[in-house]
Image (cartoon, protein in one colour):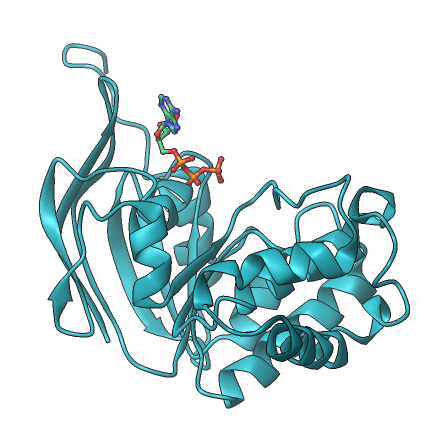
Amino acid sequence: MLSINGLDVYHGYVQALRNLSMEVRKGELLAVLGANGAGKSTLLGTLAGLHKPASGEIIFNGKNVAGYKPEKTVRQGVSLVPEKREIFGSLSVMDNLLLGGFHRRETKGQLIKEAGEILELFSPLRGREGDMAGSLSGGLQQMLAIGRALMAKPELLLLDEPSVGLAPLVVRDIMSAMAKLKDTGVTIILVEQNTRAALKVSDRVVIMERGTIRGSGSSKEPVSDKEVRQAFLGKTLVRPAGIV
Ligand code: ATP
């Protein structure tokens, strides 16, 4: 479904992605792990059209979408749930959900029906439709942020650290909702610091280091602690020339 070839992305003078290539199969749940600053958020942001690549291709369903603007990317079927959630705090839960589908030219009645299905998936949100989104707990806000992205009917859902700052039971609910979504055929790329939860829910894992993919494998095979530790802490120290 997705084939990324030789992607280079800069933030000003900082090169955040370096000649990054990877493939994502339709219907899989791919976890992306790596240390802070490895480039995980930049990868998701670039797939969502927030960062324009300096070079490289993003072939999504046979079309090169690299450099598409975010609104055009959403219409291709790619939705991002950003790390900071970015819900509209002063709007109601229902209005946040409806806004997620605003570009789809559906009737309001149809969108309300679909919002109801999302409330089924994230049942703790049920009965809170009229509440201001900003008054919800962090866990419910995260569910709402994912729900809003789903209202765009994405084929590819990008999740940036959904578990950050949440209690273990809420993380479990969110991960089990991801597994249910995957069963409906949505392809998911999940960036996570919570390695254990990510390995449990995903089919495959890629490890990023310094802007590129360092390794990949099935999440069901045991990942050696050394490999994961290295991905999080970086490679062995490189000593400057001349220092022993
Ligand atoms: P984290 O887990 O901390 O979010 P990450 O793996 O998601 O890390 P990115 O946030 O993509 O990594 O950052 C990749 C590199 O790009 C880092 O060196 C970071 O400092 C740099 N970077 C990210 N955003 C910007 C920006 N807006 N301006 C300048 N540099 C940036």
